[in-house]
Length: 55
Image 1: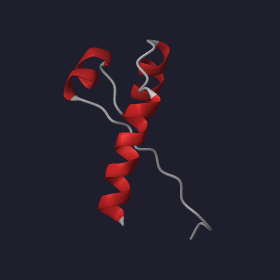
Image 2 (image 1 turned 180 degrees about the vertical axis):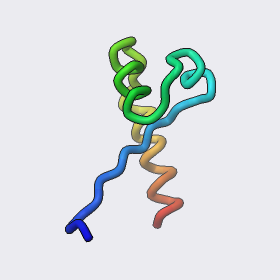
Image 3 (image 1 turned 90 degrees about the horizontal axis):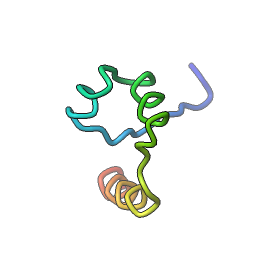
């Protein structure tokens, strides 16, 4: 059992998967190369929702 675990929350839509024909880490790389990265405000909104859900 690992001492700790990391995970990535990647907000993605079906359109993104279709556009880049990828998912998981390959989709992250493709979206990053294309400049499709969320802004700070969007990241904070997602974090707020996760805090509430995982509370």
